[in-house]
Image (cartoon, rainbow, N blue to C red):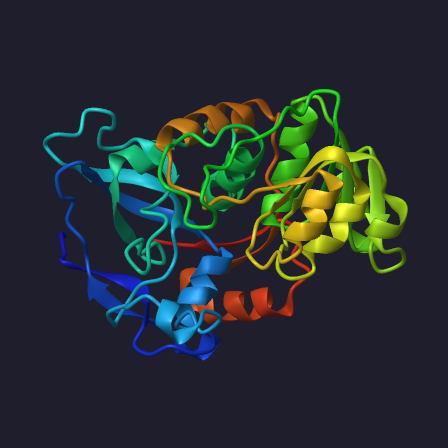
Length: 337
């Protein structure tokens, strides 16, 4: 029987995982250009806990206003339940996946039984993977793609004056730091697909998985600092970024590039002296790119690694798992009926 409510995870105040409440919430209605998706699985990403914390990692003057209550999450896989009259790309019953309204601050609302999503943010779910794998992919895989392969938009870059530009990968040496994480495990696969020699940096327990994904060399950072052994690298993708990312400058050849995924780089003078380009970007929703990536997922060219899954009602436990770190691949919430 139709109802105007659904189950969702909501925040009524900011804080730790204990602030995530499983409760009834209004079921959204698709606006023009949108489809209503019955969610089967929702991926978990760092912006989810940034929102949960009230963006406290930002200076107070930079923190965006977020009306409460709010539903976290941006990545979903599910089935189209309804479409707005002006939507032609999807029909009721289509299996879809996507990263919804990103970047935004609380408007994505993916930790729920239903989400109203712009049709342009969605692509058809690859038939060869399930909803859990599909929900794990969008943000992390789009981040790797937009950093390494194709930016896909001309929106102003909030992180630097110029637009980010990927560099050629074929025949180049690419080092991926944080290679076992969400972005990292996709990045090593895309770089290999593009013809690069790939060096993966992660803790030793992740070596078997990363070798299976095709990396050429593995550095266990718990035993050896990567900057002490890696040399003449063409590109470093540092999925951790932050203030320590400058240590990778010494691994790069002159004319190389350093792409930190998270802000905090502060060694611009050293980079200039070494002739290294440092560039960042903000991942953006892009259904067309996701459709292209869906073909790679369907073919098995890119594989999704799942660390663990949790029921939607256990989102608190999932965030507690995320806080412990050392995640292999992705965490996903499953939404049962």
